[in-house]
Image (cartoon, rainbow, N blue to C red):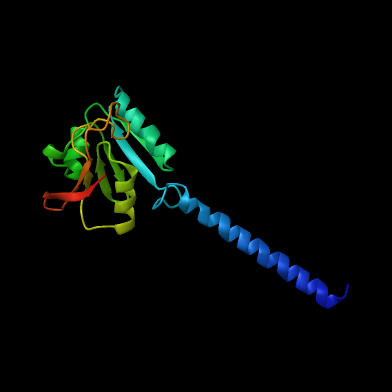
Length: 160
């Protein structure tokens, strides 16, 4: 084998390794965690005794988020601080990338806010709808997720 053939063989190996590496790195975006880059950190403020909030935390972890849990006696302080309207309130409040996420919001809506970075305070799924992430029972209809503007007004963000 001459010098030229050795160089060609090395180039084939290097290019092949690069292609394989590229293919595996792109598989992460097809894992159901679209929009979540490098395990985005979300902080969940919840009551220590709330089972559905614990289920929601587990849901977020399964979807690839790094979750920090802060147990509080009363979540109204964080809701007031972040500007969550009372009619959008739920059992727990999460913070991610400068936004609040109120209630049992599906990951698709969280990913959308992270991808689009809209000029809003946050998103909310009011109350505690059946079959929303962390909640038991059968789904009763589409989940209406709302955006909350800086002035406190709300609009439909998405329906899932």
